[in-house]
Amino acid sequence: MYGEYLDPKLQGYRLEGDRYESILPGRDGFMESRTTGLTLLPEGERLRLVVTATGELLLWSEEEAQARREAEARAAEEIQARREEAQAHRKAEARVEELERRNRALEEELERLRQGSSSD
Image 1 (cartoon, rainbow, N blue to C red):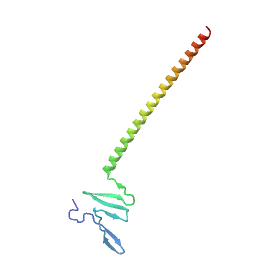
Image 2: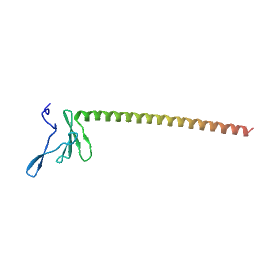
Image 3: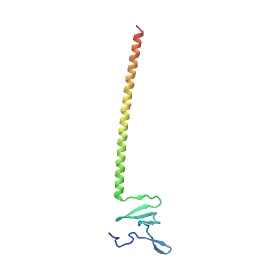
């Protein structure tokens, strides 16, 4: 759009002493800024910023919004999974309590039967 006449497309200058010197871009057209600690990488009509020290990509606003939506969706899925797990746990506990109640009733019945047969 605005850089059609530039070759290379991305150009920069660095102050060396009292003069500005041209910064040579890398093979892929990237350029490192010592001042900001960023690597500038042309992507189509846009400029991608990368933290030179870590390689972390700085997201454009729409990428950040998409990443936020995806993180929120994952969090909602995790919350739902935890709710379902808690519900299953409560059902299992209720089933255990029911079985324990039945077991006590059977033990009481068995004890009554034993006492009834020993009095015969």
